[in-house]
Length: 213
Image (tube, rainbow, N blue to C red; front, top):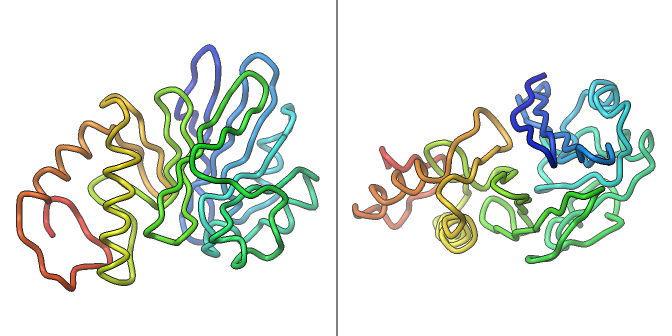
């Protein structure tokens, strides 16, 4: 599995999980080997194997869609650690989370601190997790566009989340989304600028790309 980031403080591994090609992330403190798992899509044995040799502290949920939580119950049983999610998505999880996260909260494991960003739009309780220049973005932002939305109001909301919470971060912030490849914030800001310069149908929603919508 690819190590997508590694520095003196933290290592981030990405596991692409069947059947939906969802990315789960294992974040490990370099000093203490404490770890967190971000999302629990499936293949619980494979995820648990990757966590061996670390000290799991939390399962963090970016949002409640089944392709991100399909193995949550099994992994909660295997690991015996708290599950943390936003209140607005909590009711869609297979059980009540142990910790409710809000915008601006901080999650610590070892010497690593994760800032919680509430970024509604894809779902009401969508979250991103930031440490240093690394952003685990769930299905809020991808290379080339926002996460899928079901209504024009959802699209407006996710764009507001992205512009207010994500685009204010440094240009060199590296974005690791819930599916597919990683990207760099500067590139996404440039794509969005092109999108924002054009007029769009008031009914626009769904799978939107900055450069072609």
